[in-house]
Image 1 (tube, rainbow, N blue to C red):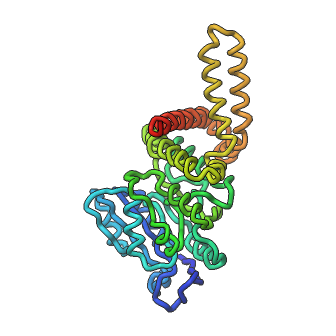
Image 2 (cartoon, rainbow, N blue to C red):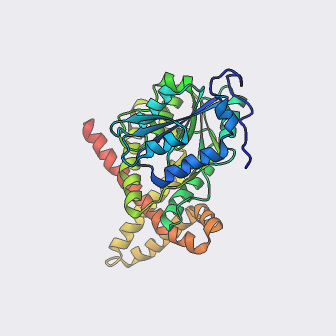
Image 3 (cartoon, rainbow, N blue to C red):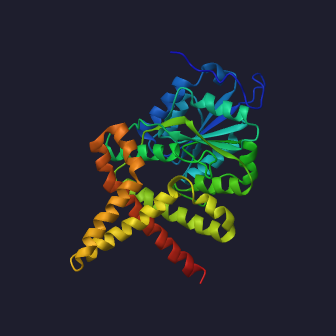
Length: 356
């Protein structure tokens, strides 16, 4: 087996003994996915880079009870054990505080790095001295084979692959940042106690401070998470949509000019916002169609509009997994628009009541 070497270091010299890059991995009961994560590091990190101190691996065991810390220790990583789980934001901050590298590369415990992931990260900072942070993308071959996992992870891949290169957010699953910048902005907000939007919030603070974040679509990792209907809806609604909308309303109140920038990227593009409205109008037409015959015709028209406005993503699913798979994604995609709109409405009411 051949290993790619980092070859170059963004700031320290190869012989300085100071790591060019520190991988920080928070883990809570990582299971088999974490084993595969470590195996990918073993497979694709050059032993000479580890021996020379150009790379270090820090695993923060966030109160795990399944022995994930032992697995990391046997692997040879620097392990920091926490007595109780406090969330990935705190775990990442603790790992970053122990890191020596000039570049902090945050990786989730349920992803595999690819052969050139690390070398691309290092090269990106070496070639762009003004770059503060970068984020990558999931690849188009998710690890879990069930339909919902394939849909969710492929949709995430599509969202990043079609997003603006000048990113507005950070991403904890595959995100790198200069350690000096990370320390200046204060790291992750530890008030987020669950795997939540702590990375998005960090990205917003980076942009508000004038820092540059690049989306590198070619820097990819493989997501291994198995999604179920319950875990997907819980994560999307309670750990993603509700806190994200609350954060956006805070930004709108404090930084109105940046609010427009933050709501024109990733999942918040204009076509997504129009799709949310179309879903609710469609449901209204279906609800009143027994009393107003024309409402049924309008419902079909709005359904067709929904299909057409989202045709690029359905074509993407067809290219990757075929027509049957693409057709199966449509109700889940429309459900996504439904609960996104519901989350915004709930958050807006809460915000108004709080500031009444």
